[in-house]
Image 1 (cartoon, rainbow, N blue to C red):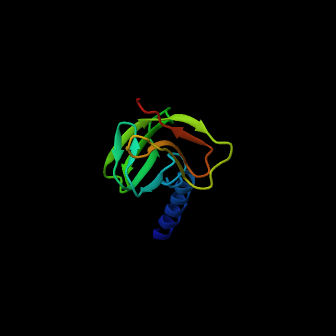
Image 2: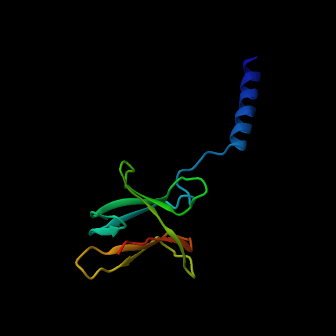
Image 3: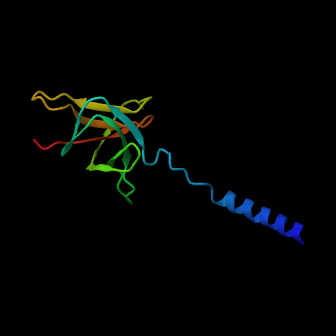
Length: 128
């Protein structure tokens, strides 16, 4: 009796695992990217201090241009920004952050972010 139960349990567990593969938190869906800035960086609405940050697409249904900027350990949400799609001719082989130099003594402004292997990225606009 016990052997039949173990066989039946193994079959049911195998079917369950085959139908519902484990979910992965590190995939390309949210474009999670860790960035380390060695100096202050301007983003729309604020300035980030030097340090490590996690950039990712927010988990919102139907909206793929909302970017969240978290602390590296994901304990603090620093900003939620609306990005605008921008496209490159070639897919970048590494994560790419494009900065715009400022001429009035403020830190460089983050202009665009592209995830490794993805030719579509996000561009950020600043109030003048």
